[in-house]
Length: 96
Image 1 (cartoon, rainbow, N blue to C red):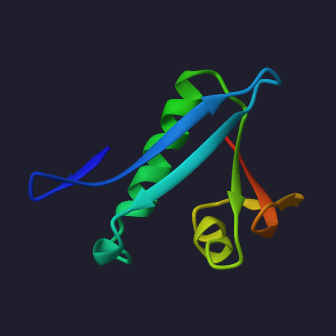
Image 2: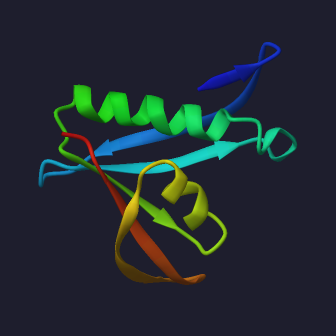
Image 3: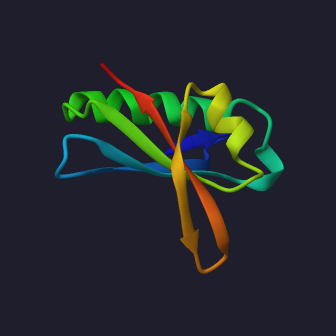
């Protein structure tokens, strides 16, 4: 969790997978704090945490709005999935 002026500003969750990778759930940042670098900091902390769990790769699900953000954080396209809200991109970032 990341705080801004003592209040929660955002968080991310790392979920280990059985295949030696990890999934990034989030990051979630309070909308009024978007574009302030909090999301990128959360992704970097999540990547470090995934590495500590010995994950070799970090996966994220991205909609069309968040794809550019993940690309700036070092993620590459890794496929597409159907969701109840429409198609989403799967993106990955090597950790090793």
